[in-house]
Image (cartoon, rainbow, N blue to C red; front, side):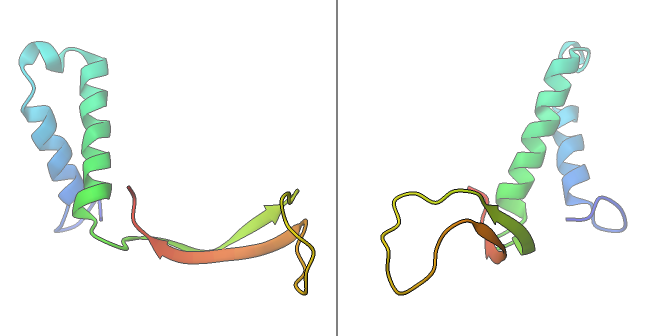
Length: 89
């Protein structure tokens, strides 16, 4: 989802939404920014496609664990990493 170069789907979508506003709406700063935000959300949830958002080895700190029964595995406070692929919904 590049913002520069030969493919600029997000920029094009923002321009389309802003161009669709009336002159009075274009003068309304809040309306313009809301349309820009709507274009970004539309792009991320639609055009980006399935599994386009990826989390790669992000640090995770667990400060408290509740509702865990004692067993063979260890659980509790600690640090680690998480990774995966998912969709924005």
